[in-house]
Length: 218
Ligand code: 5RP
Image (cartoon, rainbow, N blue to C red; front, side):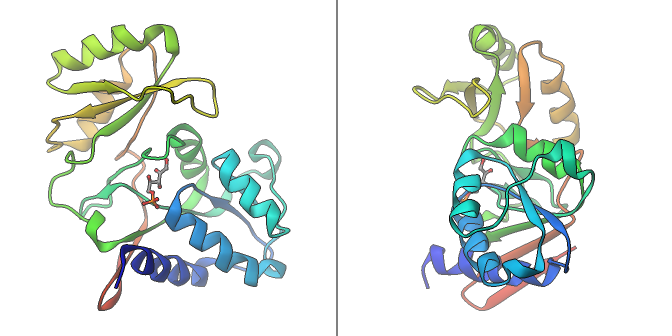
C-alpha cells in the first residue's frame, strides 16, 4: 500500500467528526486534499470551512464548499489538518507546506484538532523532519544566528514566500525532547512569526492510516 493510500484512509476516517450545520477548519497538504475531496461528498452537512491556505481555499471552492473568514465565524468545532511529525503526546511538527501560521491560528480557535496522517509520521522524538519557522523577511539572518546558538542548523527555504508575505527557516539537527519548552524559547526570538511546533496546542485526536488500517490516539 502506498503512502498516498494510507493518507487517504486517515482522511476518510476524519469524516466521522464532521457534524451537521457546523463550520469546520481545514488545513493544508496532500492528506488534507484527500479530506477536502471526501468532504465534498457530504458538503450539504456543513455551512462552510475556514481554510489555512490559498491552495486549500481554491480546492474547497472548486467543490462548491463556501470558504469563510475566521473573524466572522467565532470558535470552530473541529480543525482537520495533517502533520510532518507527531509524538505520542500528539505534539506536532507542522509547516512542511509553509502554511504554519494560519494553521496555528485555526487550531487555536478550534475546540478539537483532528490530525490526519500516514503512520510514518509517528516518532519517539521529533526533530528528524526539519522544524519550519516563519520569519519576518528582514529578521531572517538575525533569527538564524539566534537559532544556531540554541543548537539548531537553520536553512533558508529559498524562493518560498508564505501566504502572509514572510519567509521560512527550516531548522535541522534538532532533537526535540521537550517540545513545549522549545516552542516557548523559539517564540521569544524577535522576528519569529510562528514556530511550526504545535506543543502548547497539540492535536486532540491523531488518526494514522497504515497498511493494517486506521489507528486512533486521543
Ligand atoms: C502544511 C502542513 C502539512 O500538514 C504537513 O506538511 C503534512 O503534509 P502532507 O499531508 O502533505 O504530508 O503542515 O503546512
